[in-house]
Length: 287
Image (tube, rainbow, N blue to C red; front, side):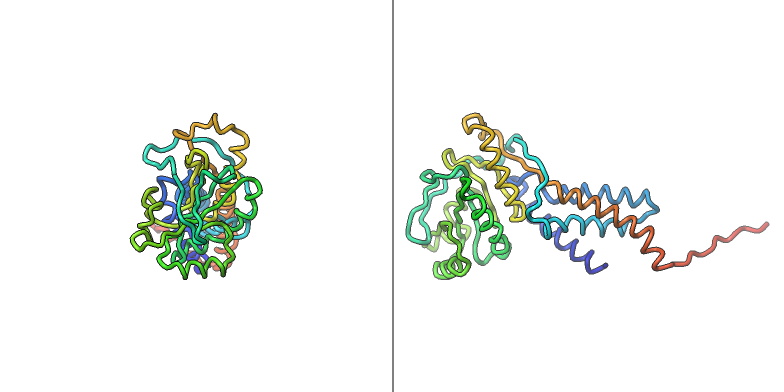
């Protein structure tokens, strides 16, 4: 039980740090907000149920982890247009040389939506998120989603071998000049990319950022929602200068609260009885 609790805490701590580092571009489904909300409800339930807080916390953390591991394709949530923060990036111009010797120009694409993935082979979270990017590209490419990688690698040969090994078919923008490698990449510098991975969904005609994805686990749901939103509303009617798409995925909330309540009940009716901790009798004052 202690091991599971530590694993859940570590898992969510890393995701919180990843989301907080991108809070100016991320969506309202920040993990830190979800964590605070679920744990507050759980602790309150634990206090009301004879201080069964530990079981509630363990259950809540395990409940929130559950859908991210076992329910990748299960989507329950909603989307809406929110006011774009004044300090957020609004537009990108993705153009540059590709690894295969061509030139990528986002304005010449035929897709409705462009996923821009800033990454590098030396970035472990980037590599861990690649299966999500490949899945989204395979699933939604026919519906109008294009993908381009902007590599911050410093070695062309190593990057090329990695691309062939993992059978990555979408284009990769790469600058050979040493002073344009890493975070000196002109596109990364122009778009204020200070940490990776970073994924942006861009409307290719105008270059407006429709929304940003703070991590790979939300990519499938966000890409699907963005495509559906663009189909429902004509591009001319979308004020992308002042609005951006916000999505809220509900399973972590639901499973987190359910897990917390289950943990409280488990501690009340099973754990304490299993341990059978004797209580010391209260002393009575004899006059």
